[in-house]
Structure formats: structure tokens, C-alpha cells
Image (cartoon, rainbow, N blue to C red; front, side, top):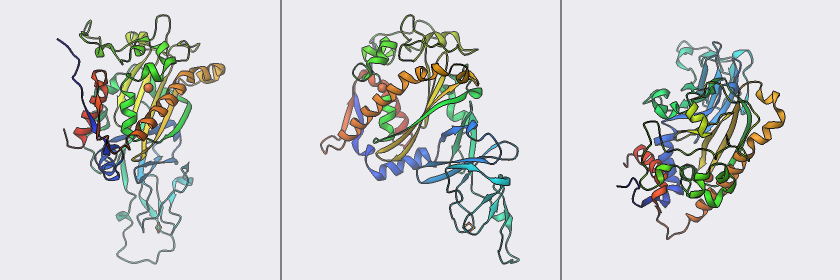
Length: 377
Ligand code: FES
Ligand SMILES: [Fe+2]
């Protein structure tokens, strides 16, 4: 008996390059699913805002007078001008004012003033609120759903995967560092690379010292022929090396461990929550981090890597922060290069599709998810 899958084809090469296919994925996934766009701490006060872009859509993320997060298309209801030109800022006096003819909206999106408009009996302010966008939060992360009628709640969409990191105090943690990287690759290439460790021995020598199983070119024990779980709680995930505790360049950290963590997960040194298709979150004993994806085109991707600590910790341990970032910064750069090599090679006219070998079961999982989204399962 074996749990090892047979080899199978990868996705069609043109799915990584073709503009029409890219549009199909925007429509089926990015304009339909719940997409992670940032953290609540980016808009601490009512009227604070930032703009996020998903495909061709620009969305204002703000907080209303009740402190609730709100999201609107960045488009005026009059003749459609863009409302905010700056990527972040503050709506003074709780007013969102169009720069073109000054139509003025409240933080709840209602049209509240139209200066200089010649009055007419048939004009009803109530008919022209901003186009609102579904917004919700999980663990301090803000998500939006551009579908006017979301098929699922955020909680349903995140499902059991989000529960993996339930014992991490994410909601109360704060950003201590953020890195935004642009990669010349399709967004799916990133997820494929994320979900296999076949590349680890060659690409990540430093990471392989911290997580020795990765040096074998597999992501978990489940990728070993004949592996059986030891008990109900054994998910086949690896641990950091004996004597190490976490993901830093030397596998240790002077930072205090977080309170309330699941002991088994803490002992492993890392716990992943893969929240397709816009984010993953990793809990480590001393910190947590997220990586958000934003496709910028068929062959362009923006990554935002965010490191989180409890409030006050970075101030208390200023010399430890660079060390905390050390391994993951390196790994992100190494993966980024590999993703770009992958994209570049896909331009070969003869390469219609690749092949997945047994330890790329995680890549097959991503492909199954994608095919289902596209109605090709
Ligand atoms: S387009 Fe906004 S007020 Fe005219
Ligand atoms: Fe990697």
C-alpha cells in the first residue's frame, strides 16, 4: 500500500501567460472570493483609509464613525471619477469628496452633499450611495469580496484551514515589519512553489538546516512512501531541528514565546494556514507572519510579507528584530528568483505542460482547487 500519487500533468502552460485566461481567473477567483487586503491597524481611526487594487478594481478601505471597517469602489456615483488619488490618508470631517464636481459622501457611503448642483425635483440623494463592497475581518486581517452577493461568509470561506493558527493571538498582534516585493511571475507559480519542498535542498540550504526534513526534498512525512499517521493528531508536518525552536537564521530567538499556544504546534516551530488564493499565515512560537498575494497581470505578482508581534515586544527587544526577519527574508528572495526562472521558461513554444512528481502532491492540491474554481474539475 502506498499513499504516494502517480505522476500527473501540470496545468496548461498558456494559463500562466495568456491575458484571456488571466481575465478568467480574475472573474472566477479574485472578483468573487474573499481577498485579504491588509490589517485593521492600518486604519486605526474613523476616516483613515487606504486603497487596494484587485485586478482593474480600486477599492477604498476605511473605518466608519462606529469604528466598523467599510469598503467602497473608488468611483464617484456622479460621472464616475476616481475619488481618492492618494493610496492612503484620512477623510477629514468624515467626508469623502470627489475632486471633480465635489459630490460628498459620508463614511457610510451615503451621498450627503452636492455643492453647486442646479436643483431639480427629480434628484434624490438616496439614489447615489457609493458602490459598497463586502468587508469582514479575521484575526486582525481585513478581507473584501467584490462579488455583490458573496456566495459564502468570510468564516465559511476560510474554513478549517484558518483554525490551524487559532491558538495564535493574531488579532492583538501588531506589524513590526513589512516587505513588498514585485515578481515577474504568474500568481499560481508562487502558490505552486510555496506548496512543495522538492526545490528546498537546492534553493534553501539555510532553511534546510532549520527544518531537516526539507533537506530530503519533501514538505512533510506524508510525502514519504508508506507513511502512516502515528495518531489522530499527526498530520505528517515536520518540526524544526532538535534544539531549535523557530524560523530564524539559526533557529532560535531571544523573544519570549507567545501565550496560549497549542503545545504540539509550538513544539513543531511552525504552523501554516494556507488561505487560498490571497494569503497564507504562519505561526511560530515567538511571532507570526503572513504573505499576501496580489496579481498585477498574467506575469506579474506583488507579495506583501508581514511580521507580527504582540504590542510592545519590538520596542522591548529592538536588537532582536533583524534576527527575527533573517531567515524568512532570505527564503522569500530565494523563492522569488525560482518563481521568476519558472515563469521565464514557460515561454518555450514546445512546453505545453509540465509534470508533477509524487512529492508535489501539494502542487496538485493547488491545481485541483484552481480547476474547481474555473469549473474544470
Ligand atoms: S464625477 Fe464625482 S462629482 Fe462629478
Ligand atoms: Fe521555497
